[in-house]
Image 1 (tube, helix red, strand yellow):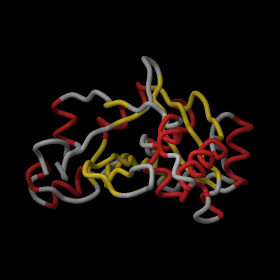
Image 2: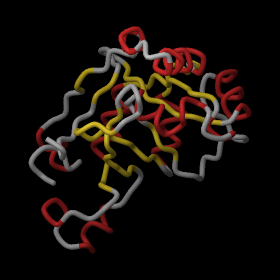
Image 3: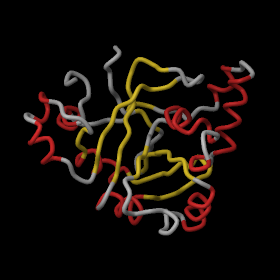
Image 4: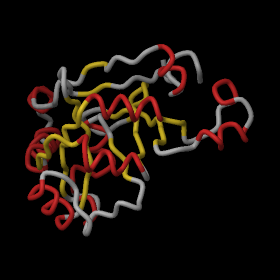
Length: 200
């Protein structure tokens, strides 16, 4: 189903893992402090978090795409915070079946923006289902940095080890090193709000 949308992530009862890629300067400061600090992190900018490991690898080119994305960070945040973000989320594009008219959609734009992009495979090829990206700004960024983050880990070396195995054709070995992501549960109301199954 090409339009199938789901949230898949590595999570437990208390936390869920999301990924971001940053420069050495931002990554080093965040790892030292256990959260993002300004400067060099910019609280006023929208920051995007991604629960899908392979989508992050696609976006950052395994940490080799550019200097602003050469450190891959795994950020464990509270599920309470993640669920708050989903509840506050509004799709980044208008959908009449969900929002009504465009004015109503614009009125719903707040601290959390939701975008769905094609999920990626080990070779970073497009897969049929779509994976969520969550954009945080304003209040959401302050909560993310100040309350939700429980742990930050630099996984650049681990990611590039998987990349090397893929390049050598060792797909089974590479796949065995992937995080064991599974479908994250959401209520029917949140699924509809976020444009999941049956709404797009």
